[in-house]
Amino acid sequence: MKKKTRLLILFGGRSSEHEVSLRSTAAICQNLSPERYQTALVYIDRRGRWFRQKAGAAAFKNKTLSPRADPRGAVSLPLGKRGDAALGSIDVVFPILHGPYGEDGTLQGLLELLGLPYVGCGVLASAACMDKEATKRLAEQAGLPVLPYIVAGAGSRVLAGEVGGKLGWPVFVKPARQGSSVGVSRVAAPRGLKDACRHAFRFDDKILIEKGLTARELECAVLGGDSKAEASCLGEIIPSREFYTYEAKYLDPEGAKLVYPIDLGEKKNAEARGLALAAFKALDCHGMSRVDMLQDKKTGRLYLNELNTIPGFTAISMYPKLWEVSGIPFPKLLDRLVDLALLRHRQKSKLKTSL
Ligand SMILES: Nc1ncnc2c1ncn2[C@@H]1O[C@H](COP(=O)(O)OP(=O)(O)O)[C@@H](O)[C@H]1O
Ligand SMILES: [Mg+2]
Image (tube, rainbow, N blue to C red; front, side):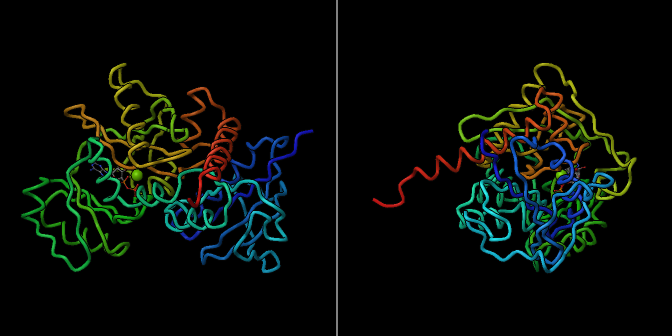
């Protein structure tokens, strides 16, 4: 019998998307092939402490996990290839941590230092995709369409006249390095700008002010390695409110409709999928990313909005659903991601580190 792959799932985390991570992890555990994997779970609590979990079925009630911060399960860092004694050795890590301290390159840096293969994007792509200014700059440099924007640092004065002159109204004001629509506002007229900036500055000391569109929100799932990546069918988010807010994402079950696959016509489908692949490449992504785009309802033009390097993986999340309708069922998708992680690690370990 072939030896099982020892997979460590890291979940929870210090972010506003902690709960999503629990649900994503439950769905992943239920879709991992038991013949191939021996799975260990480590929960990162909201304070950043790591705890080993039992992988027992009892933990999977109601499609989520109920992790325990039991000091007897505390994990001490660094984990090595030989592992924390209590965890056993690890072949590959699957981080299911959304947002800061998980999706932003910090954790990926730790795993690089430990020499452990891990699923998903590396340090640079993770950090660049978490920062909306860096995403835009790299995309622009690759000739990809992004909406016009202004960046403001803490303490800088944002002048409504300047914003209106460059971007028109409405605008969207966003913290540069957040997710889940946290701190995002739509501003229809100059008088709302100051409050929206103040609100965004609560979450980051750098904010973006962006031209606001009346737009369709399109998503495409990308899967692959350095040399070859594939784009899924397209999906659409149809929010029931003015835009796709935090409430619409997580609190209100009627907050948005996820529609997939959608058909924009042959030419536009190809253009959107091409944009998703080009963005994946421009941002140096590896493994997976969900690429979010906006399509201007008036002109039909497409714009890159953002890339999520660790997208939601719940049973109803767009990333696994888009692959399912594109012919890769959830368990197979997980195998592909793990294979990509192991392959990248093998290739990297062949590189010379000295002359
Ligand atoms: N320029 C824009 N024009 C129209 N809607 C926008 C624009 N920017 C953001 N939005 C709306 O705000 C939501 C959150 O913005 P987004 O940039 O995706 O931030 P987050 O990283 O928090 O998801 C989007 O899903 C969309 O509904
Ligand atoms: Mg978004």
